[in-house]
Length: 208
Image (cartoon, rainbow, N blue to C red):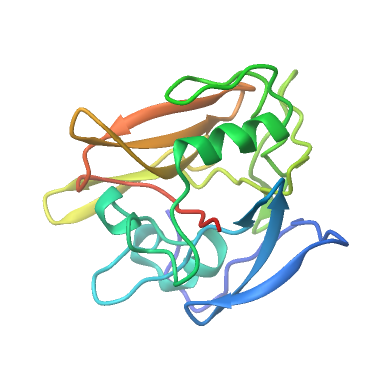
């Protein structure tokens, strides 16, 4: 659990790349990674306003570190003008660039996770631990970190999967639920899952 003390939490180790650029989106500066013909923001979107989106354990200081968590319905409109929520096709192309031999929509994609993951430290503690066969290379400059996900319990959010999962909404839906992509700490697979559109919250990366 993150303390609500005034001390500012710190994320270190995020590399700087020569070809990266920056943009201010929703009044916050983000770095941009270009993968093929698609731009991706390298940090989790951190836009929270009037009950839209939530910070990790409701701690505002965590927005600059983990970004915000959104329901699928919130995610559809979370990206600023000129940007959008990535589709399954966007994720397939990203995973191909990351080194996957085969990649298809609505299917797990083997071999893609290491090229999306980056070794970073939160308050001095490693986030992704090293596992044989899952050596984070950040080949795509996507810079995924394991911030987990949240589920709604009554009127409040409960958070799970820190240091284990990275979960990102897509614009797709299946059988009335939202589709998300996720990475698990000791697998090289980019998985696909579905969750309720309002009772589950994940991270958002915007594309254009």
